[in-house]
Image (tube, rainbow, N blue to C red):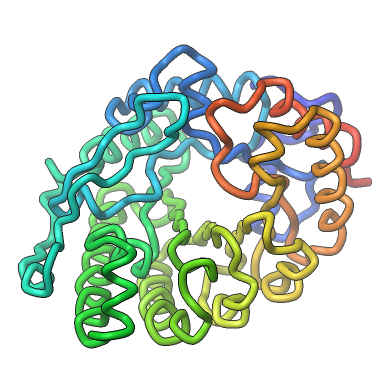
Length: 357
């Protein structure tokens, strides 16, 4: 891996020390990279969701180029729609960066009762994830598994607009769907734990549908909080060391409720650029490592100087203020079409501002 100028630790040593509350040499940085890795090495973005070996190679080679500290991973925000019986469209143009759902498995209230636990050998991205995770395990890496929170997954199963209508007009149906989805997510996680061992797994959640652009904090409290809290409690009870939870989008009004949800000791909480890092530290700093939150749109469309300045601000705001530690990271997935030199600015900012005494 391409080293920083003054690195005294490997990425694995750095993350282990950070999780253990021990001193580290510099601020780690994650790239939150999938489609960008494909474009970097000449693969299609669709390969990142259908070809375990190609996405493994693309991320490994991109990490070698940029020297970032993040584990390799596979997954997508629309998780659940394909895995539970729907259909997706793979990204096929420069304007799409991840799979999108073209047919939902639940189209009516009656369909909710027809949902079944997926066939782990054939359903959606699950067999590709398993193959990818086996490549990680064979290489001595941490196994990273990814799925959404129950609320986001429920929206992916029936459509966000329909799910929101059910919350307002048929809350019992919404709760039934959340109950089924939560149990399925617990069961999928248990299978991965049985396969690889809890001590070898990093679990990631992404939560875009709980953003306040979609639901109010009142509805978050009723429909998202209890199921997400239950899921986190159950998977941590399996023996997982921590959860990396990406609280996506504008969620400032939900933060008091997110603070009630366990992430591990410590967990890792990453946030969109809409949440100031000082605010994130206020709610999560005592229990979780804070990660974020350089605006992805600026990484793609801004100048290198603008990206560098945002990185500097993030590092100086959180480097010493986050009690459990800080990771520099984009505020959401790195845009596949981001200029490579803009992405390099994250590394340059770490070199210039990220070292600890």
